Length: 178
Image (cartoon, rainbow, N blue to C red; front, side, top):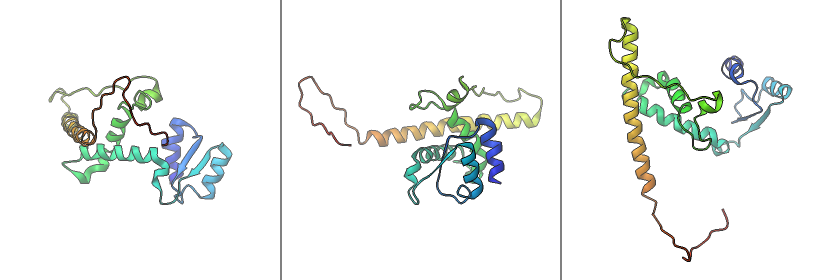
């Protein structure tokens, strides 16, 4: 049930949230959830129907995770669910300019552990060796795919930019409204 997932994946790690933004999913508008959140002092906020921009932070994170998953599964798209935890870890250990650290650092107060590279046959346990070789191959593929995606995004962003230089005394237009 959603209550079990909430208890096992959210509450045990973070406690009860102060606010939850929901897309009006029937799971979160049931009497059970309304009463639980009321008793715990959690504000349940609803995004506008058919207006996902209301919950912009989640939309951005979902878009980022989707990009990671595309990089992970470019060779085997049907196996995307197998890479979801790795995509989440990658996101949580990536620098976020808004908070000037990784989400991992913000939560735990220390830098995330790095994933050590693995040399084939470093262990006598065949299944472990196979798993670590596969992980190493996935990480190399991921780094390559992310670098390519980053270059594509940079090219698209730079296509609309102009480098302008201003000197003291130059006249410029100033837009005062957002």
